[in-house]
Length: 418
Image 1 (cartoon, rainbow, N blue to C red):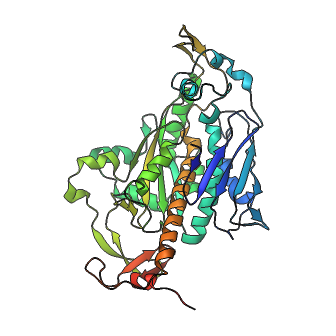
Image 2 (cartoon, helix red, strand yellow; image 1 turned 120 degrees about the horizontal axis):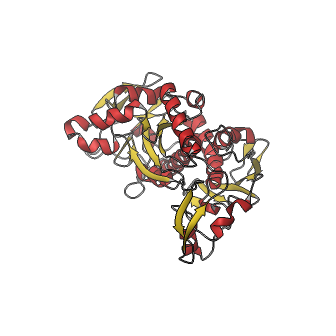
Image 3 (tube, rainbow, N blue to C red; image 1 turned 180 degrees about the vertical axis):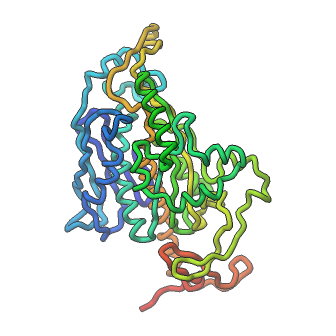
């Protein structure tokens, strides 16, 4: 389906070569200051033609807010966002009328719907992600203002060229202290300073050359994107089937060209015995001096039992090599006749540099939806009389609340009266 979320719902629309793409956001809280200037930066980071490492398709991707705001603030009603397609070249795709592209969605879309978009990838095109990024920018602004939440994604590998932490974890099974520290400090400004969006300058140079080599060979190459979410509210996630990591995996694997997802220690953690992998509880001090329980290590990736524990959430997504390449490929036509497909058009030799804002957007949508679900539960519970102390509900304890506050659970459950 084209709709994501339950309380904060986003429906995207448009194909790669239609008049435009965009989204409808339903469920955004009223009163959020919002203009196009709040959304445009992320769309600009996603847009094509940023360097010689991306597709040369020239799209400005200027967003327009159609509805849902007045005097620069959200009304609580559906927000309509649209971006025009301006540099379409449908004639570049005449060959795909005869041959389905290998490893692309041409054939499967035809199997499912009985017809397909005649040019580009239709809804399977990365142009569809514009609506996601626009909606994600709205969600991210709310999270930043309400909780101080920060979401940063960066390229961690291209082909076999990888940041050192990937090789280190393959040897030890768990993330290194240096990697965990980097997750706490890395910024978008550092990432955007490199054309590959890898914060390691030396590794970035090698990634650049690997992408150029693929481009000059009319080929493509894949890679991975790592994402960290900081200042995450506690208690997010809906066991059993909508655990927070399950929703993140769902979101990330819905992005075009994704093939893998791991969170926290990921697959490496399967090699480490429990006494070394367990995250011990310790008392921590918040930004305003409040005491709360946190973990000494964070191999869990900020989620336990499917619920956020207040630590940084971090995960890695694998993107395959783009399917559309300009090399001649031996394949078979829709009619079953063997032949050669020589694809034209403008395509990314590697998608991961432009995928970082898409990953950030989907992370923001997951967290925003989870926040609204949890706030609804807490709001309903606050109307009830306080529960007595029981063995299942120990004496009042301190629960961290991002934003520098701390509240006693008993106080949080008391009905508020004026």
